[in-house]
Length: 286
Image (cartoon, rainbow, N blue to C red; front, side, top):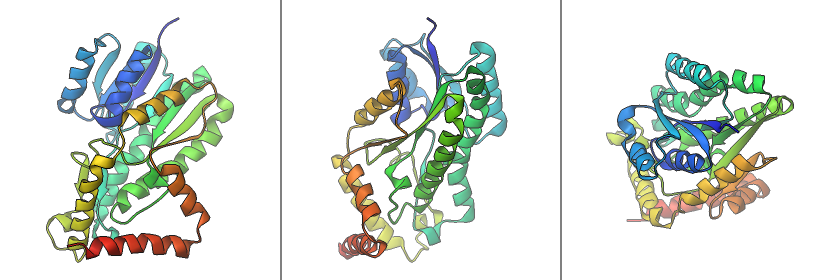
């Protein structure tokens, strides 16, 4: 039996890198795409270390580049003739209070986190439809279900991804294509370090929210040591990949399920009080 073929976006670091390695060890041929080959150093080193050079092909593909996406997927189709698994992982986090985020920054956030997913998925779907089978994994976030202050752009893009995935799941079910959402909580990846961008208004201190945001940012940094190991998420991703009948949503991380349930069950007024109270505590810190 020939190996199955997987495409992963945003494979240069974090969940994308670890998923690439895990799938290659699951006897997949993996097309690991990165925005720029200059960002692939860590990935290539891991591939060599784990002796997976024959199983992983590192390809430059910027999900915001319409022409490049079409060219890369077309080349994969010509070379392999099929795609069994697509993992939409590429993304970055734009932090900032909503009033500080410019229109250009909103567009940039959505161009990668949402429209990038749409572009790649749309390019891959014809192959999966011809095969009458395939699986698409969306790497979302608890932020797509539970929105907190200071990460509005990121959370909004993930919320849109959730709705898109639900539509796609229902539309593709009868075709034989499974759509799955992975919803991690807080994990030790680079998205809030090298992968994080801050709204320009907050970077140059012109925002009335500057001090509040800096306290929020410091709180996130202080809590980083309590974040889970990303291997927990990789195990869940592999579980979703190999499941004969996968669930639609996989929630993973300490407190994720409880937090989502609390928000769903509490009246909005009580939920709002809880969040505002936490923000007030944070703002009062010296």
